[in-house]
Length: 410
Ligand SMILES: Cc1cc2nc3c(=O)[nH]c(=O)nc-3n(C[C@H](O)[C@H](O)[C@H](O)COP(=O)(O)OP(=O)(O)OC[C@H]3O[C@@H](n4cnc5c(N)ncnc54)[C@H](O)[C@@H]3O)c2cc1C
Image (cartoon, rainbow, N blue to C red):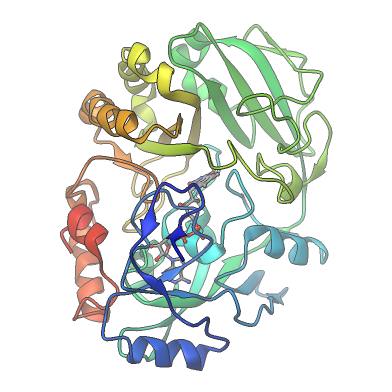
């Protein structure tokens, strides 16, 4: 049976191993693999990142969630989608700091690739990780936490360090959020003062196309918070539910009224297919937020090339962090995202043009989306340390693949 990722943009050559039901079985599978092993999450990456000879899915592993209220942490099996974790901790009055656009992705896969939501003061989802439990290349077990100097190099690991069986995340007391959509906000308002637009709420997303005069600004306000105005930057607050892609208002979370953090921070509902239901290719590049205006202007110059292939662009922010392979390592970042039509040859031809336009800003591509760049190590100040950690924990390359060779030279 052919195995593809969620969007059907990558067909795996690898076979899926028998689903292990215990950590011991994972250890045995890795030890007996002979190399070429990749763990897989929920298959939401768009590229060949998760490819291998043997894929290990943890979908049948036990799913107990261990909340430690004294430590304000939750230890979760890596295969669980964020929605499951959110429901369990919310029921006990706890919350995560942020979520990505969809709650369907696994915590293991999301944190391995620096998956992010938005917010100038919010780190990506990997920054909530306080501990990792791994099965390493020799089939042994390794626990890493913030007391270990290797931890900052291990959190965003791209599957290269082993099979992560459990992830421990920081939690905080539960809170409410409301999200409001401002229509017909002039592009110029974003270009003139990006800090004002992206600083207007706990989590802010700008949605639109490149050649238009106006965009939508989605503001997620953490409550209790300031009064939500009816007009911002000359754009009116929508009074009806707004879609993200096409006219599907059924798959987006509730707008215009307060609700629990996990039902407002993601754009998409867990009980619906997100985005364009997989009829799409996604790409995203991170630049220093200080370069936002110049970088956005450079991409806008390509609007005639981009917009015919584009379903929607989303702009978000990510706070700087110290994780060695995080796309926000050392710089508060603007994420410039494209949801393209699933027209693979045309998108492949376009990406080098976008990358050339962004080149002056040292763009870092999202690890799990489409990009044409290769040999990315030089973009990461701690890359040599990260490479040394990969070689230390996996000297024979059990968990490396064509992607890690092409993209990182590892
Ligand atoms: C509709 C849609 C919306 C998206 N929205 C966002 C968004 O808002 N923000 C954002 O940043 N990204 C977003 N993404 C991208 C997505 O979050 C990342 O690609 C993420 O890595 C997918 O997680 P996954 O569980 O599907 O992992 P997979 O794609 O299955 O795997 C990703 C990587 O993690 C490794 N991995 C997975 N599980 C383990 C494990 N247990 N142990 C070791 N390695 C493991 C794999 O080997 C692979 O290298 C979106 C993707 C889609 C399809």
